[in-house]
Amino acid sequence: MNLPCYSRRHFLQSAAAVGLATGLGGCWPGQGSSKEVQFLNRSLPPQLINQFQRQFPQAKELNFKAIANLQSLFDNLQTWHNAQNADTSKGLWGSGSRANQIPKAQLVTGGDLWLERVIKEKLIQPFVPDQLSQWPSLPPRWQLLGQRNDQGLPDQSGKIWAVPYRWGPTMIIYRQQPFADLGWQPTDWSDLWRPELKQRIALVDDPREVIGLTLKKLGYSYNVTNPGAINALPSALQELATQVKFYNSKYYLQALLNKDVWLAVGWSNQIIPLLRNQSELTAIIPSSGTSLWADLWTMPADAEGAEITYEWLNFSAQPSSLEQMATFSNALAVPYQNLEVSALSTNPLLAFSPELLERCEFLAPLDIATVNQYKQLWQTMRSA
Image 1: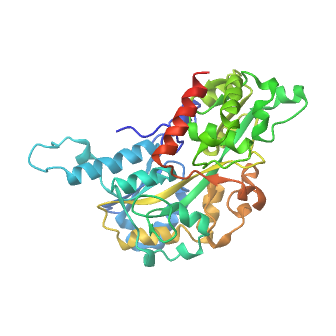
Image 2 (image 1 turned 90 degrees about the horizontal axis):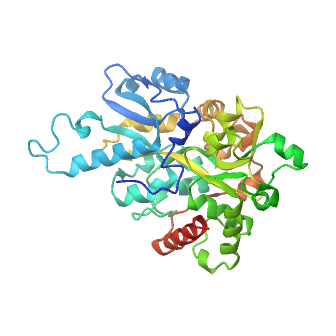
Image 3 (image 1 turned 120 degrees about the vertical axis):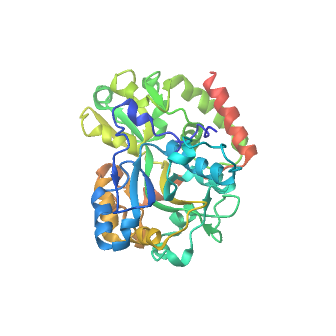
């Protein structure tokens, strides 16, 4: 079953298009390990894993395994669930089946927009709140990412279905020289509508992101629940469509590198690594605010919830662990204990001011009627 196409959380293979993907990235096994922690490649510092394994003798039970992309992690959750619920009579799966080849994990990285679906489909189970010693020090905004009702919707009184550990923004990345020639630099979403950029823009093929940034430009939230009622929205999307040369979530950065476009919109964890070797490029967080994404720990439905699993969750949420994540990742650590954003990343491009962060939003689940409105707006825009 394919995932919805409208989220970076579902398809990270686009990094491979510009040489950013790094494969499986290796494992950090314990001696005689029998339980896996499957995490998104390059999202955890190896030294943090090593430190955990040295500090906790029982960590030998855990095998930390880096997985290339979130799609594969989701597929594993589905495979385990289907195997658990299928008729297990002889020959149903066969000794060579994918279900038998993939060890079941204790923890799996998930994306924030997964959560509604994997809860509804019973692919994961909630955590035990009393076992999460650091959870009370997590600000409510981040708690609400993982705290959901049984329908997967954010709920302050809901169960804890996921524990966030890193996050980042959608950004604008652009070539500096063309804008130096123009005599101005992009600062906000409204710049995408400037006539100088006609056919000079690449966007991800993602309705929530593109319609969302247009809503933001018009002064609305990314999470508008009745976009059809905003009279200015269709014309703004049509105008933006004339500016766009390329829609693609896989090759949008390649278009920028090839100089096919001057500017692109995409996700920070893909953009920031590219900047290290491309001095001609720079990136910004739009001043009116942007969408945010998050990676979270989830527990597969039939995992045993071992004590060492909770030890890892609590260990990785300590200030010293967050500092290592901030130094290592192309993202931000989660602000346990109300840490300032400046302590959550060492990259100046991710230096949110408190005021800017307040203007940014995680993408909320939408009901079916609202999703259909977004689909219709997207189809109309793409056919322009």
